[in-house]
Image (cartoon, rainbow over all chains, first blue to last red; front, side, top):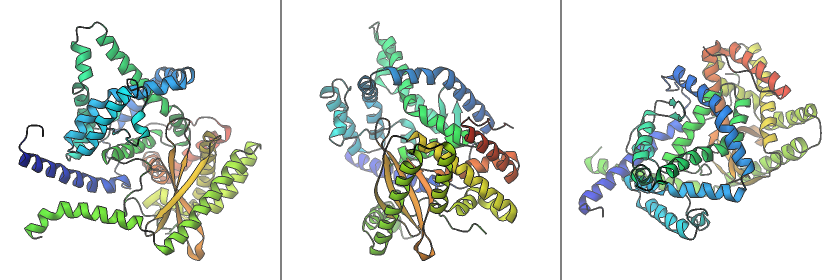
Length: 263
Length: 220
Protein backbone atom coordinates (compact mmCIF):
# COMPACT_ATOMS: atom_id res chain seq x y z
CA UNK A 1 0.00 0.00 0.00
CA UNK A 2 1.26 3.46 -0.98
CA UNK A 3 4.43 1.78 -2.25
CA UNK A 4 5.80 1.38 1.26
CA UNK A 5 7.15 -1.89 2.60
CA UNK A 6 4.52 -3.33 4.86
CA UNK A 7 6.75 -3.25 7.92
CA UNK A 8 7.32 0.50 7.53
CA UNK A 9 3.65 0.87 7.05
CA UNK A 10 2.88 -1.07 10.23
CA UNK A 11 5.25 1.09 12.22
CA UNK A 12 3.69 4.22 10.77
CA UNK A 13 0.26 3.04 11.67
CA UNK A 14 1.41 2.22 15.17
CA UNK A 15 2.92 5.65 15.56
CA UNK A 16 -0.19 7.42 14.36
CA UNK A 17 -2.35 5.29 16.58
CA UNK A 18 -0.12 6.07 19.55
CA UNK A 19 -0.23 9.76 18.70
CA UNK A 20 -3.98 9.59 18.38
CA UNK A 21 -4.29 7.97 21.80
CA UNK A 22 -1.94 10.53 23.28
CA UNK A 23 -3.89 13.38 21.73
CA UNK A 24 -7.27 12.06 22.76
CA UNK A 25 -6.07 11.49 26.31
CA UNK A 26 -4.36 14.87 26.45
CA UNK A 27 -7.42 16.48 24.94
CA UNK A 28 -9.82 15.07 27.50
CA UNK A 29 -9.23 17.55 30.33
CA UNK A 30 -9.29 20.45 27.89
CA UNK A 31 -12.92 19.74 27.05
CA UNK A 32 -13.86 20.86 30.51
CA UNK A 33 -10.97 23.16 31.12
CA UNK A 34 -11.82 25.26 34.12
CA UNK A 35 -8.52 27.03 34.40
CA UNK A 36 -8.77 30.79 34.32
CA UNK A 37 -5.80 30.77 31.99
CA UNK A 38 -7.52 31.22 28.66
CA UNK A 39 -4.30 30.59 26.70
CA UNK A 40 -4.94 33.64 24.62
CA UNK A 41 -1.73 35.70 24.78
CA UNK A 42 -2.76 37.85 21.82
CA UNK A 43 -6.14 38.64 23.36
CA UNK A 44 -6.12 42.42 22.70
CA UNK A 45 -5.26 41.82 19.03
CA UNK A 46 -7.72 38.95 18.82
CA UNK A 47 -10.51 41.00 20.33
CA UNK A 48 -9.87 43.80 17.85
CA UNK A 49 -9.94 41.31 14.95
CA UNK A 50 -13.05 39.68 16.38
CA UNK A 51 -14.82 43.04 16.56
CA UNK A 52 -13.68 43.84 13.04
CA UNK A 53 -14.90 40.49 11.69
CA UNK A 54 -18.22 40.80 13.50
CA UNK A 55 -18.74 44.35 12.24
CA UNK A 56 -17.88 43.34 8.71
CA UNK A 57 -20.08 40.26 9.09
CA UNK A 58 -23.01 42.41 10.17
CA UNK A 59 -22.79 44.90 7.30
CA UNK A 60 -21.56 42.64 4.49
CA UNK A 61 -21.65 38.89 4.94
CA UNK A 62 -24.73 38.44 7.13
CA UNK A 63 -27.11 40.38 4.82
CA UNK A 64 -25.87 38.40 1.82
CA UNK A 65 -26.17 35.10 3.71
CA UNK A 66 -29.62 36.06 4.98
CA UNK A 67 -30.78 36.98 1.50
CA UNK A 68 -29.37 33.71 0.19
CA UNK A 69 -31.10 31.76 2.94
CA UNK A 70 -34.47 33.50 2.58
CA UNK A 71 -34.72 33.91 -1.19
CA UNK A 72 -33.10 30.77 -2.58
CA UNK A 73 -35.42 27.76 -2.78
CA UNK A 74 -34.42 25.38 0.04
CA UNK A 75 -33.80 22.34 -2.20
CA UNK A 76 -31.41 24.37 -4.37
CA UNK A 77 -29.57 25.77 -1.36
CA UNK A 78 -29.22 22.35 0.25
CA UNK A 79 -28.08 20.98 -3.11
CA UNK A 80 -25.38 23.65 -3.34
CA UNK A 81 -24.34 22.89 0.25
CA UNK A 82 -24.02 19.19 -0.57
CA UNK A 83 -22.09 19.89 -3.77
CA UNK A 84 -19.62 22.16 -1.93
CA UNK A 85 -19.01 19.44 0.63
CA UNK A 86 -18.56 16.86 -2.14
CA UNK A 87 -15.90 19.07 -3.72
CA UNK A 88 -13.97 18.98 -0.46
CA UNK A 89 -13.65 15.19 -0.65
CA UNK A 90 -9.99 15.25 -1.78
CA UNK A 91 -9.03 17.12 1.41
CA UNK A 92 -11.10 14.81 3.59
CA UNK A 93 -9.51 11.82 1.89
CA UNK A 94 -5.94 13.06 2.10
CA UNK A 95 -6.25 13.79 5.80
CA UNK A 96 -7.98 10.57 6.79
CA UNK A 97 -5.07 8.81 5.05
CA UNK A 98 -2.46 10.99 6.75
CA UNK A 99 -4.08 10.10 10.06
CA UNK A 100 -3.80 6.42 9.20
CA UNK A 101 -7.56 6.06 9.39
CA UNK A 102 -8.25 3.80 6.43
CA UNK A 103 -11.75 2.90 7.50
CA UNK A 104 -12.84 6.52 7.29
CA UNK A 105 -10.83 7.08 4.12
CA UNK A 106 -12.94 4.30 2.61
CA UNK A 107 -16.10 6.12 3.66
CA UNK A 108 -14.85 9.33 1.99
CA UNK A 109 -14.20 7.48 -1.28
CA UNK A 110 -17.53 5.69 -1.13
CA UNK A 111 -19.34 8.96 -0.43
CA UNK A 112 -17.61 10.71 -3.29
CA UNK A 113 -18.47 7.97 -5.77
CA UNK A 114 -22.07 7.58 -4.61
CA UNK A 115 -22.80 11.30 -4.34
CA UNK A 116 -21.10 12.25 -7.60
CA UNK A 117 -23.16 9.66 -9.50
CA UNK A 118 -26.41 8.74 -7.74
CA UNK A 119 -26.27 12.12 -6.01
CA UNK A 120 -26.17 13.97 -9.36
CA UNK A 121 -22.77 15.61 -9.17
CA UNK A 122 -22.94 15.94 -5.40
CA UNK A 123 -26.23 17.84 -5.24
CA UNK A 124 -27.84 15.08 -3.20
CA UNK A 125 -26.14 13.52 -0.20
CA UNK A 126 -27.31 10.05 -1.13
CA UNK A 127 -24.56 8.35 0.86
CA UNK A 128 -25.75 9.85 4.15
CA UNK A 129 -29.05 8.02 3.74
CA UNK A 130 -27.20 4.72 3.89
CA UNK A 131 -25.33 5.75 7.02
CA UNK A 132 -22.12 7.02 5.47
CA UNK A 133 -21.94 10.48 6.95
CA UNK A 134 -19.41 13.11 6.07
CA UNK A 135 -15.93 12.62 7.55
CA UNK A 136 -14.91 16.23 8.06
CA UNK A 137 -11.14 16.45 8.00
CA UNK A 138 -8.48 19.06 7.40
CA UNK A 139 -4.74 19.30 7.86
CA UNK A 140 -5.07 21.11 11.19
CA UNK A 141 -6.83 18.03 12.54
CA UNK A 142 -4.12 15.82 11.08
CA UNK A 143 -1.46 17.90 12.85
CA UNK A 144 -3.46 17.52 16.07
CA UNK A 145 -3.55 13.76 15.62
CA UNK A 146 0.20 13.87 15.07
CA UNK A 147 0.51 15.55 18.45
CA UNK A 148 0.69 19.26 17.64
CA UNK A 149 -1.17 21.27 20.28
CA UNK A 150 -3.95 23.64 19.31
CA UNK A 151 -3.07 26.58 21.52
CA UNK A 152 -2.91 29.52 21.61
CA UNK A 153 -6.03 31.10 20.18
CA UNK A 154 -5.68 33.41 17.19
CA UNK A 155 -8.31 35.44 15.36
CA UNK A 156 -7.37 36.44 11.81
CA UNK A 157 -9.03 39.30 9.98
CA UNK A 158 -11.65 37.92 7.56
CA UNK A 159 -10.68 34.29 8.25
CA UNK A 160 -11.81 34.24 11.87
CA UNK A 161 -10.85 32.06 14.85
CA UNK A 162 -7.88 29.76 14.49
CA UNK A 163 -4.60 28.75 16.12
CA UNK A 164 -1.04 28.63 14.83
CA UNK A 165 -1.51 24.92 14.14
CA UNK A 166 -4.78 25.38 12.30
CA UNK A 167 -3.44 28.36 10.38
CA UNK A 168 -0.69 26.18 8.95
CA UNK A 169 -3.34 23.53 8.38
CA UNK A 170 -5.47 25.98 6.45
CA UNK A 171 -2.65 26.87 4.08
CA UNK A 172 -1.88 23.19 3.49
CA UNK A 173 -5.59 22.57 2.83
CA UNK A 174 -5.59 25.21 0.11
CA UNK A 175 -2.48 23.97 -1.67
CA UNK A 176 -3.31 20.28 -1.29
CA UNK A 177 -6.66 20.77 -2.99
CA UNK A 178 -6.48 19.59 -6.63
CA UNK A 179 -9.33 21.94 -7.53
CA UNK A 180 -7.20 24.90 -6.43
CA UNK A 181 -4.47 23.92 -8.90
CA UNK A 182 -6.97 23.24 -11.65
CA UNK A 183 -8.42 26.68 -10.98
CA UNK A 184 -5.02 28.35 -11.07
CA UNK A 185 -3.28 26.42 -13.83
CA UNK A 186 -5.95 25.21 -16.22
CA UNK A 187 -6.07 26.66 -19.74
CA UNK A 188 -9.81 26.69 -19.58
CA UNK A 189 -11.00 30.31 -19.18
CA UNK A 190 -13.77 29.40 -16.78
CA UNK A 191 -11.53 27.51 -14.36
CA UNK A 192 -10.46 30.47 -12.29
CA UNK A 193 -13.86 32.22 -12.08
CA UNK A 194 -15.39 28.89 -11.07
CA UNK A 195 -12.76 28.45 -8.39
CA UNK A 196 -13.55 31.87 -6.91
CA UNK A 197 -17.27 31.19 -7.16
CA UNK A 198 -16.71 28.08 -5.11
CA UNK A 199 -14.76 30.07 -2.50
CA UNK A 200 -17.49 32.72 -2.29
CA UNK A 201 -20.29 30.19 -2.09
CA UNK A 202 -18.43 28.31 0.65
CA UNK A 203 -18.11 31.47 2.73
CA UNK A 204 -21.83 32.23 2.37
CA UNK A 205 -22.86 28.62 2.92
CA UNK A 206 -20.80 28.45 6.11
CA UNK A 207 -22.42 31.59 7.45
CA UNK A 208 -26.05 30.53 6.95
CA UNK A 209 -26.30 28.13 9.93
CA UNK A 210 -24.60 30.71 12.15
CA UNK A 211 -26.94 33.62 11.38
CA UNK A 212 -29.45 33.13 14.17
CA UNK A 213 -27.20 31.47 16.79
CA UNK A 214 -24.62 34.28 16.58
CA UNK A 215 -27.24 36.97 17.10
CA UNK A 216 -28.74 35.05 19.98
CA UNK A 217 -25.36 34.45 21.57
CA UNK A 218 -24.44 38.11 21.29
CA UNK A 219 -27.68 39.14 22.95
CA UNK A 220 -27.33 36.73 25.85
CA UNK A 221 -23.63 36.77 26.65
CA UNK A 222 -21.74 39.13 28.94
CA UNK A 223 -18.57 38.56 26.96
CA UNK A 224 -19.40 37.64 23.37
CA UNK A 225 -15.74 37.16 22.49
CA UNK A 226 -15.13 34.63 25.27
CA UNK A 227 -18.42 32.85 24.52
CA UNK A 228 -17.39 32.38 20.89
CA UNK A 229 -13.83 31.40 21.82
CA UNK A 230 -15.11 28.65 24.11
CA UNK A 231 -17.58 27.32 21.53
CA UNK A 232 -14.99 27.34 18.77
CA UNK A 233 -12.44 25.47 20.86
CA UNK A 234 -14.89 22.83 22.03
CA UNK A 235 -16.14 22.28 18.49
CA UNK A 236 -12.60 21.97 17.22
CA UNK A 237 -11.85 19.39 19.91
CA UNK A 238 -14.85 17.33 18.84
CA UNK A 239 -13.76 17.50 15.19
CA UNK A 240 -10.26 16.33 16.08
CA UNK A 241 -11.62 13.46 18.14
CA UNK A 242 -14.03 12.64 15.28
CA UNK A 243 -16.88 12.95 17.66
CA UNK A 244 -20.38 14.06 16.88
CA UNK A 245 -21.96 16.56 19.21
CA UNK A 246 -24.58 13.93 20.09
CA UNK A 247 -21.95 11.38 21.14
CA UNK A 248 -21.70 10.64 24.83
CA UNK A 249 -18.46 11.79 26.44
CA UNK A 250 -16.18 9.24 28.07
CA UNK A 251 -16.44 8.42 31.73
CA UNK A 252 -14.64 10.89 33.96
CA UNK A 253 -14.44 13.51 31.24
CA UNK A 254 -15.75 16.95 32.00
CA UNK A 255 -16.16 18.93 35.15
CA UNK A 256 -17.41 17.92 38.56
CA UNK A 257 -20.22 19.88 40.06
CA UNK A 258 -20.02 19.91 43.85
CA UNK A 259 -23.05 21.41 45.45
CA UNK A 260 -21.56 23.84 47.90
CA UNK A 261 -22.93 27.36 47.46
CA UNK A 262 -21.97 28.26 51.02
CA UNK A 263 -18.35 27.21 50.83
CA UNK B 1 7.32 0.08 34.27
CA UNK B 2 8.77 -3.10 32.65
CA UNK B 3 9.67 -2.70 28.98
CA UNK B 4 7.03 -5.14 27.85
CA UNK B 5 4.35 -3.21 29.65
CA UNK B 6 5.62 0.08 28.30
CA UNK B 7 5.31 -1.24 24.77
CA UNK B 8 1.90 -2.61 25.48
CA UNK B 9 0.76 0.61 27.09
CA UNK B 10 -0.78 2.31 24.02
CA UNK B 11 -2.72 -0.83 23.32
CA UNK B 12 -3.66 -1.13 26.92
CA UNK B 13 -5.02 2.41 26.76
CA UNK B 14 -7.04 1.47 23.71
CA UNK B 15 -8.39 -1.61 25.44
CA UNK B 16 -9.21 0.46 28.51
CA UNK B 17 -11.20 2.88 26.33
CA UNK B 18 -13.21 0.02 24.87
CA UNK B 19 -13.77 -1.49 28.28
CA UNK B 20 -15.00 1.81 29.64
CA UNK B 21 -17.40 2.16 26.76
CA UNK B 22 -18.73 -1.33 27.40
CA UNK B 23 -19.12 -0.60 31.09
CA UNK B 24 -20.93 2.63 30.32
CA UNK B 25 -23.39 0.95 28.03
CA UNK B 26 -24.26 -1.70 30.62
CA UNK B 27 -27.08 -0.21 32.66
CA UNK B 28 -26.83 -0.38 36.43
CA UNK B 29 -30.16 -1.24 38.02
CA UNK B 30 -30.25 1.59 40.58
CA UNK B 31 -29.02 4.13 38.09
CA UNK B 32 -31.59 2.98 35.57
CA UNK B 33 -34.37 3.82 38.00
CA UNK B 34 -32.96 7.30 38.71
CA UNK B 35 -32.33 7.72 34.99
CA UNK B 36 -35.99 7.02 34.31
CA UNK B 37 -37.01 9.60 36.88
CA UNK B 38 -34.58 12.12 35.40
CA UNK B 39 -36.02 11.56 31.92
CA UNK B 40 -39.53 12.13 33.27
CA UNK B 41 -38.33 15.22 35.16
CA UNK B 42 -36.81 16.80 32.06
CA UNK B 43 -39.65 15.78 29.78
CA UNK B 44 -42.10 17.50 32.10
CA UNK B 45 -39.90 20.56 32.50
CA UNK B 46 -39.45 20.99 28.76
CA UNK B 47 -43.12 20.35 28.12
CA UNK B 48 -44.18 23.00 30.60
CA UNK B 49 -41.60 25.51 29.39
CA UNK B 50 -42.73 25.08 25.79
CA UNK B 51 -46.48 24.86 26.33
CA UNK B 52 -47.20 26.92 29.45
CA UNK B 53 -44.60 29.63 28.95
CA UNK B 54 -43.25 30.05 25.44
CA UNK B 55 -46.27 28.82 23.51
CA UNK B 56 -48.80 30.50 25.81
CA UNK B 57 -50.48 33.60 24.49
CA UNK B 58 -49.63 35.79 27.48
CA UNK B 59 -47.68 39.02 27.97
CA UNK B 60 -43.89 38.88 28.43
CA UNK B 61 -44.23 39.86 32.10
CA UNK B 62 -46.39 36.84 32.81
CA UNK B 63 -44.07 34.57 30.84
CA UNK B 64 -41.22 35.66 33.07
CA UNK B 65 -43.27 34.94 36.18
CA UNK B 66 -44.24 31.48 35.04
CA UNK B 67 -40.80 30.61 33.87
CA UNK B 68 -39.29 31.81 37.13
CA UNK B 69 -41.53 29.46 39.12
CA UNK B 70 -40.58 26.57 36.88
CA UNK B 71 -36.89 27.36 36.81
CA UNK B 72 -36.40 28.07 40.52
CA UNK B 73 -37.97 24.75 41.41
CA UNK B 74 -36.14 22.70 38.78
CA UNK B 75 -32.66 24.20 38.77
CA UNK B 76 -30.12 24.50 41.54
CA UNK B 77 -29.69 28.25 41.12
CA UNK B 78 -27.57 28.92 44.25
CA UNK B 79 -25.26 26.03 43.33
CA UNK B 80 -24.96 27.16 39.72
CA UNK B 81 -24.34 30.76 40.84
CA UNK B 82 -21.48 29.59 43.07
CA UNK B 83 -20.05 27.44 40.30
CA UNK B 84 -20.00 30.16 37.64
CA UNK B 85 -18.12 32.52 39.97
CA UNK B 86 -15.58 29.84 40.77
CA UNK B 87 -12.78 30.21 43.25
CA UNK B 88 -13.65 33.79 44.13
CA UNK B 89 -16.97 32.71 45.63
CA UNK B 90 -15.18 31.85 48.88
CA UNK B 91 -14.10 35.45 49.36
CA UNK B 92 -17.55 36.94 48.80
CA UNK B 93 -19.62 38.21 51.75
CA UNK B 94 -23.01 36.59 52.48
CA UNK B 95 -24.83 39.77 51.42
CA UNK B 96 -22.99 39.89 48.12
CA UNK B 97 -23.76 36.22 47.59
CA UNK B 98 -27.43 36.82 48.14
CA UNK B 99 -27.46 39.81 45.79
CA UNK B 100 -25.58 37.90 43.12
CA UNK B 101 -27.82 34.84 43.28
CA UNK B 102 -30.87 37.06 42.79
CA UNK B 103 -29.35 38.93 39.89
CA UNK B 104 -28.07 35.70 38.33
CA UNK B 105 -31.53 34.18 38.62
CA UNK B 106 -33.07 37.16 36.78
CA UNK B 107 -30.51 37.14 34.00
CA UNK B 108 -30.76 33.35 33.60
CA UNK B 109 -34.52 33.49 33.30
CA UNK B 110 -34.42 36.28 30.73
CA UNK B 111 -31.70 34.45 28.81
CA UNK B 112 -33.63 31.20 28.72
CA UNK B 113 -36.81 32.91 27.62
CA UNK B 114 -34.81 34.47 24.83
CA UNK B 115 -33.31 31.09 23.87
CA UNK B 116 -36.67 29.36 24.01
CA UNK B 117 -38.29 32.05 21.89
CA UNK B 118 -35.84 31.00 19.18
CA UNK B 119 -37.14 27.45 19.40
CA UNK B 120 -40.75 28.56 19.56
CA UNK B 121 -42.29 26.36 16.92
CA UNK B 122 -40.25 23.25 17.38
CA UNK B 123 -40.46 20.20 19.53
CA UNK B 124 -37.81 19.00 21.91
CA UNK B 125 -37.65 15.22 21.89
CA UNK B 126 -36.22 13.53 24.98
CA UNK B 127 -34.54 10.30 23.94
CA UNK B 128 -32.74 8.73 26.89
CA UNK B 129 -30.22 9.14 29.64
CA UNK B 130 -26.88 7.99 30.98
CA UNK B 131 -25.10 8.57 34.26
CA UNK B 132 -21.68 8.91 35.78
CA UNK B 133 -20.80 8.58 39.46
CA UNK B 134 -22.42 11.86 40.43
CA UNK B 135 -24.77 13.07 37.74
CA UNK B 136 -27.46 11.97 35.32
CA UNK B 137 -27.43 13.20 31.73
CA UNK B 138 -30.78 13.36 29.95
CA UNK B 139 -30.41 13.36 26.19
CA UNK B 140 -32.73 15.23 23.88
CA UNK B 141 -32.79 16.79 20.46
CA UNK B 142 -34.49 19.86 19.10
CA UNK B 143 -35.44 19.95 15.45
CA UNK B 144 -33.34 22.56 13.72
CA UNK B 145 -34.68 24.95 11.12
CA UNK B 146 -32.82 22.79 8.67
CA UNK B 147 -30.27 20.05 8.80
CA UNK B 148 -29.81 17.59 11.59
CA UNK B 149 -31.55 17.99 14.96
CA UNK B 150 -29.52 19.83 17.59
CA UNK B 151 -28.55 17.59 20.50
CA UNK B 152 -29.23 19.01 23.95
CA UNK B 153 -28.15 17.23 27.12
CA UNK B 154 -29.66 18.16 30.50
CA UNK B 155 -27.35 17.50 33.41
CA UNK B 156 -29.26 16.53 36.51
CA UNK B 157 -28.14 15.79 40.04
CA UNK B 158 -29.99 13.78 42.64
CA UNK B 159 -30.05 15.38 46.05
CA UNK B 160 -30.81 14.01 49.51
CA UNK B 161 -34.36 12.77 49.61
CA UNK B 162 -34.30 12.01 45.90
CA UNK B 163 -35.05 15.52 44.65
CA UNK B 164 -33.72 16.09 41.15
CA UNK B 165 -32.04 19.37 40.29
CA UNK B 166 -30.98 20.65 36.89
CA UNK B 167 -27.40 21.93 36.95
CA UNK B 168 -26.36 22.34 33.33
CA UNK B 169 -27.65 22.38 29.78
CA UNK B 170 -25.24 21.13 27.15
CA UNK B 171 -26.13 22.33 23.65
CA UNK B 172 -24.25 20.62 20.83
CA UNK B 173 -21.69 19.34 23.32
CA UNK B 174 -21.12 22.85 24.68
CA UNK B 175 -21.78 23.23 28.37
CA UNK B 176 -23.66 26.45 29.07
CA UNK B 177 -22.37 26.29 32.64
CA UNK B 178 -18.72 26.20 31.59
CA UNK B 179 -19.25 28.78 28.86
CA UNK B 180 -20.89 31.14 31.35
CA UNK B 181 -18.14 30.54 33.89
CA UNK B 182 -15.49 31.46 31.35
CA UNK B 183 -17.30 34.62 30.34
CA UNK B 184 -17.74 35.64 33.96
CA UNK B 185 -14.09 34.96 34.72
CA UNK B 186 -13.09 37.23 31.85
CA UNK B 187 -15.43 40.04 32.89
CA UNK B 188 -14.36 39.80 36.53
CA UNK B 189 -10.73 39.95 35.56
CA UNK B 190 -11.29 43.05 33.47
CA UNK B 191 -13.97 44.93 35.37
CA UNK B 192 -12.77 44.49 38.93
CA UNK B 193 -14.16 41.30 40.37
CA UNK B 194 -17.71 40.49 41.33
CA UNK B 195 -18.86 44.12 41.54
CA UNK B 196 -17.81 44.77 37.98
CA UNK B 197 -19.52 41.59 36.80
CA UNK B 198 -22.70 42.52 38.64
CA UNK B 199 -22.75 45.97 37.03
CA UNK B 200 -22.50 44.31 33.61
CA UNK B 201 -25.20 41.78 34.48
CA UNK B 202 -27.49 44.54 35.69
CA UNK B 203 -27.14 46.30 32.33
CA UNK B 204 -27.84 43.03 30.59
CA UNK B 205 -30.91 42.39 32.71
CA UNK B 206 -32.31 45.79 31.81
CA UNK B 207 -31.61 45.28 28.10
CA UNK B 208 -33.06 41.78 27.95
CA UNK B 209 -36.15 43.15 29.65
CA UNK B 210 -36.57 45.71 26.89
CA UNK B 211 -35.73 43.16 24.24
CA UNK B 212 -32.80 45.31 23.19
CA UNK B 213 -29.28 44.23 22.48
CA UNK B 214 -26.96 44.73 25.41
CA UNK B 215 -24.49 47.57 25.31
CA UNK B 216 -21.10 46.26 24.27
CA UNK B 217 -18.82 45.39 27.15
CA UNK B 218 -16.38 48.28 27.58
CA UNK B 219 -12.93 47.44 26.34
CA UNK B 220 -9.76 47.89 28.30
